[in-house]
Length: 370
Image (cartoon, rainbow, N blue to C red; front, side):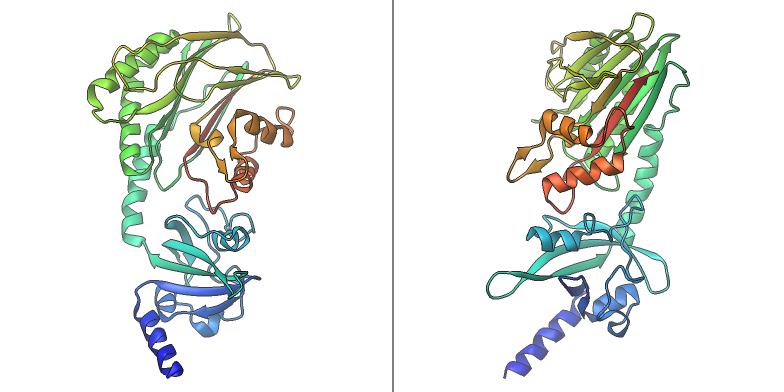
């Protein structure tokens, strides 16, 4: 009777459209379903007893980063954290023919009767159709946030943008406003996904119309807020933002905030200042009051703007990372004596959260005075 029941379970698994595989704690594959073979082309004989990174699936993320290292492998992280994925993860697997297949993946640890984690299970489905459309949307969105970084021997800009999915809800822009003035804005639209991405396109349009106003950060922020408040009709705030003018002639940075994280000013000697400007998130109400905070800047200083997703990374034990936690991670990188490395910071954020993946878009803009 038990053998018949097992056969029935096997028949059910093989009839599913989703692929399923199981691995042990060394990430060796111990089970491979028929649907897994149909989707990838790899047979059970090809994969059993081997690791998925052993020239088999060789998973990468949407940005082309290899996921086979211990920190980035979702299945490995599920086993070491004891937590499954909260939602489908997007990864790209290599088929037997060598092409990349976009997949929505769910991972969970497997436990023995005593509750010990003894392996992991991954369920995946071919996401080619929907990802094709999202990648077209990403190409359009990237056109809206691609700016030539200003060429000025006195000031060097670096930008880092990691959307949560194929498309994201962070928006950033920068522009030369005069011979000695540069403007920057970093906005974090509430939520992420298609709706947030569409809103970033509207922000791009508003930037193109009004960025010249950033010579007065309060005037710029107020104008963008009023424009958005007239068209955004939801019960939630629209976006947090930091709007910054770098005035090289007068040696000052002028900041107007709209509910977002502070701007971090790091001096050449490693001392830091947090530039905080209070103000409501954009589109909460028309004619919302905003204020400007001005600080002195000099050669060797670095201004760092970052979206909420950086400092709101959560750890069950420690809570939100916060500004102090971000500063600690930067110090461990040797910043500012060493340049900011986004791959190292992303890995540190993942370790802090102890989760499968980061839960929000991440954007940083650094302006370094030379």
